[in-house]
Picture 1 (cartoon, rainbow, N blue to C red):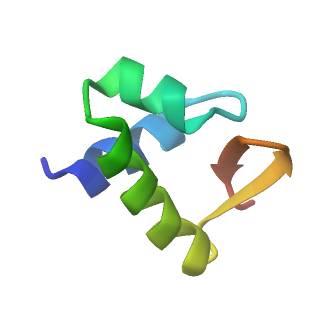
Picture 2 (cartoon, rainbow, N blue to C red):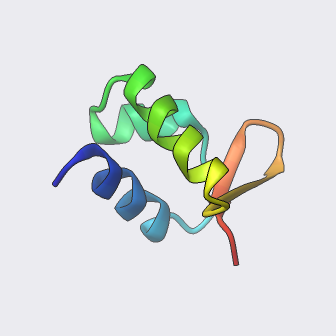
Picture 3 (cartoon, rainbow, N blue to C red):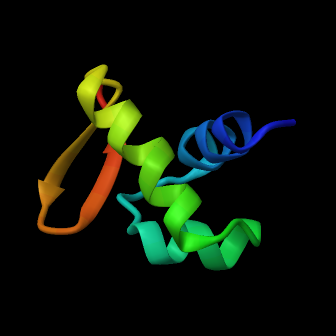
Length: 59
């Protein structure tokens, strides 16, 4: 799995909004790489932030 797939899988399994730091810690992916993938997900409208710095899959 590439980083995009791992991060999407993490979001799909998460029951609550998560931060980039939590994703990096849980997956072992470098924080800068997590930020890159999350920027792409934000631009595509796949994830949304309902609380500052915490993200979840758009429902």
